[in-house]
Image (cartoon, rainbow, N blue to C red; front, side, top):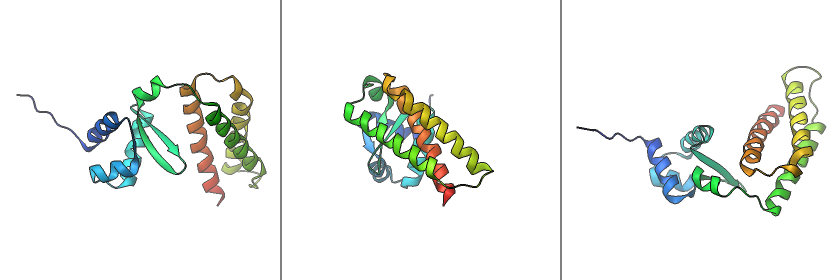
Length: 150
């Protein structure tokens, strides 16, 4: 006798696979689970490469990883937008006033180096998935740095 046990996380993955693209807010309403919990699960599932998180303005959407793997090209408009965002982050990091020593200075040097590296190589990147992963990591580090400055 086989018993099939499913968890709320399984329900989340199933819903994303069925819808292919769904907002965190909508998932929260359907599953009756708070958005902050959905966000935590989504971040873990993205790290495990099960789903992908995409942001449109301030709204996070969860995407089926198979669907995003099929669509690996990036439009010129999206490419230009990402490039402008990187340039903006670079200028904010370089102009940030931080103590001459300590963790913030190390973060600033790291971010500045990564932003310059991505900026100089951005025009040659053909593989959107690799670019997206690198960009998402960079944005996470940038947000941590920005939060520490406050």
